[in-house]
Length: 98
Image 1 (cartoon, helix red, strand yellow):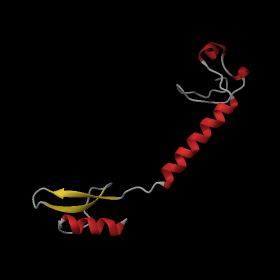
Image 2 (cartoon, rainbow, N blue to C red):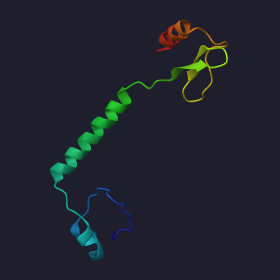
Image 3 (cartoon, rainbow, N blue to C red):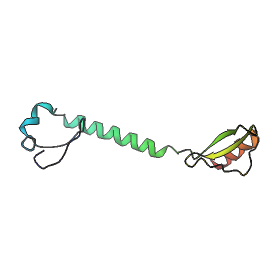
Image 4 (cartoon, rainbow, N blue to C red):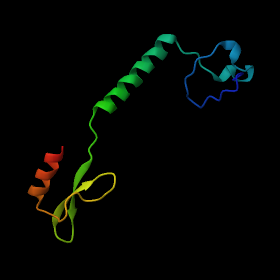
């Protein structure tokens, strides 16, 4: 753009026709303002939904050696419990956390 701003492929932006270099005028599609607002609302709804959905922090993992279960932090992979436990006890612990 004339202001030196770089526009990425498929990126929406607002500009006056005089701000767009003539070399790029044939590659740019002018969007209706209503469509732009609709896309912004959809993006806002997507972000709100993502933020309102609680992220799982722990999950069950089977310990192959002991054939028992651990409650494991999803991000770090570290078990919450000290010793592997039965699946029932591990599920109870997991449910008490959530």
